[in-house]
Length: 296
Ligand SMILES: NC(=O)c1ccc[n+]([C@@H]2O[C@H](COP(=O)([O-])OP(=O)(O)OC[C@H]3O[C@@H](n4cnc5c(N)ncnc54)[C@H](OP(=O)(O)O)[C@@H]3O)[C@@H](O)[C@H]2O)c1
Image 1 (cartoon, rainbow, N blue to C red):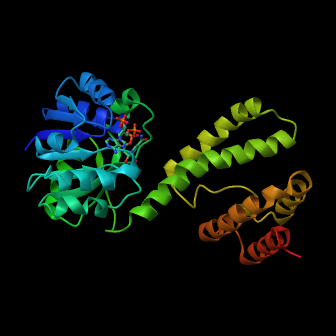
Image 2 (image 1 turned 90 degrees about the vertical axis):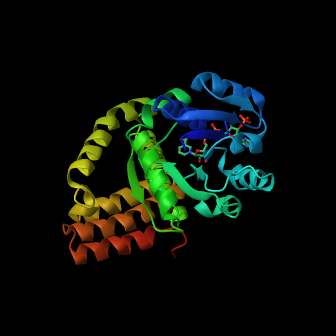
Image 3 (image 1 turned 120 degrees about the vertical axis):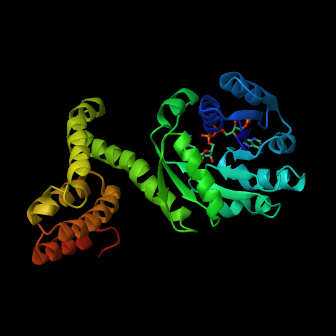
C-alpha cells in the first residue's frame, strides 16, 4: 500500500516524492511529459523509475499523485484511466488548490478512490518545498471516507495539519487563499504607488512599511479580525478619509475605484469591531459613493 507513483515531475511532485521516500514509502516511478524532468526528479528523490509512460508508471503503485499543472490534471487522469493505469482500490490524489476532486472522476470510474489534497503553501522551488511542506495545512476534499482517511495518513507523513472544506467548495477556498496571498501583495503595491506620489521612492517606502506590515500581521495573529483593524475608518475619522479621496483623485483618479471598494469592505469590518459608529459609517459610505468612478 505504500508504493507511490508521481505523475508530473515538477516542484510539488518532486518534493512530495522525496518526503514520502524519507518517511518509508517506496516511490516506484516518476513520469512526466518530458523524460528530462522525470530523470531530474528521480535523481533528487533517489528512487523509482523515470519515464514518460504515464499509465505504466501509475499502474506500478497503490498511491498515484497527479502533480501536473492544473490545466493538465483532468486530461492526464483520463488518459491514464483510458489505458487502465489505475488499479482498483488505488488512491489517486491531485494537489491543486483550484480544482475540485471531480476532475479525477475517470479514475473513480475505474475503481480507484480519489481525493484532492492541497498544501496551503507557496512553493517556488523543490528545495523550498521540501522545507516548507512539513508543518503546512492541507485542504482535503473527497466524498469517499476511506480516501479521506488515507489522505489524513499522508498529511501525517508530511507532518501537516488538516483543513476540511465542503464538497464543491474548492473554487471559493482557492479564491480566499488568492485574496489573502495575492491581494496582500497587490495591496502593498497600491500603498507603494501612493507613497511614490508623496515623493518617497519605492525602495525606501517598502523598507519603512515592513515594520508596519509585520506589526499588523502580529496583531492579526494575536487578536484576529476584525479586532486587528486600526486606522481612520475604524476610528470614524470622516475628514481624513475625505482628504485621502481628494488627494488620490488629484494624483491618479484611476486608483479611486480600488480605494473605495477596499474602504467599503473596511467599513463593514469596523462596524463588526464596534469602534465605528453607525452615523460615521453612513458619512464615510456617502463620501465613497461620491468619489467612486462613474458618480455624477
Ligand atoms: N508550487 C506551488 O506553490 C503549489 C502549491 C500548492 C499546490 N500546487 C499544485 O501542485 C500542482 C503542481 O504544481 P507545481 O508547482 O509542482 O508545477 P510545476 O513545477 O510547473 O510542475 C508541473 C509538472 O507537470 C508536468 N506536466 C504538465 N503537463 C503534463 C502532461 N500533460 N503530462 C505529464 N506531465 C505534465 C510538467 O512536466 P515537464 O516538466 O515534463 O514538462 C511539470 O514538470 C498543481 O496542481 C499546483 O496547483 C502548487
